[in-house]
Image 1 (tube, rainbow over the protein chains, first blue to last red):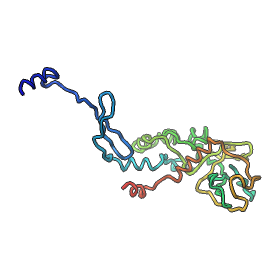
Image 2 (image 1 turned 45 degrees about the vertical axis):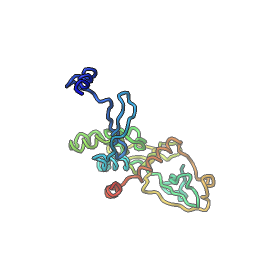
Image 3 (image 1 turned 180 degrees about the horizontal axis):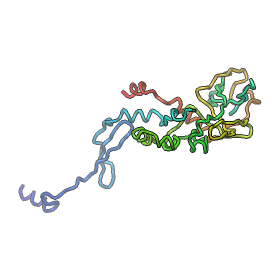
Image 4 (image 1 turned 90 degrees about the vertical axis):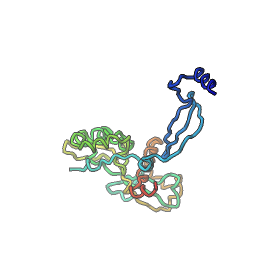
Length: 79
Length: 176
């Protein structure tokens, strides 16, 4: 076993050396949800890690439902 | 599409607000042409082209420059953080046209003559007439003009936003 580990170490990375994960995580905001996915380093989809509601989802839903309007009337009142 | 008001009073022109596919059953929604408000001319961006209220505009252009200068910093930051949006969501401006009567806008800085007109979605009314059957079978002599497809699309979007606004109380319930 010990020999085997030594062989593995010498053939890959040294002890303490940074070994990057073979995938990357991405968070996609989709409406009120936040989806975490894994991709290979070349950008191919692997799987979905989690789906959860955004922390500020209430605000995002309000802004999606309501059109953007600049409330300006009070500054245009005729003298 | 514009209709002559049969009463021939001061506002003789009205706009049909019924979507064409809903023109039937002897009923039609119309709203009168109104003169532009002098207040609109406080903002040089809107004074330069009043039709700008028909589209979404940047926050910075939504108010006259002197209003920004005197505005509280927190309100200013909040307003400027918004994406492009409508101003005067109740209104839609019609470009000047030779058939439209010219009128005078009285202003402190000098009167302006204009043939631009505005409609107020809140002032729409229903008319009933036996001749209103389909978009093709209407009192044809009353029709004087029709919007371009592009402007009609702007009108649809703006009147859609007029009805799409959700009060805060309703929004709170809908998202829970």
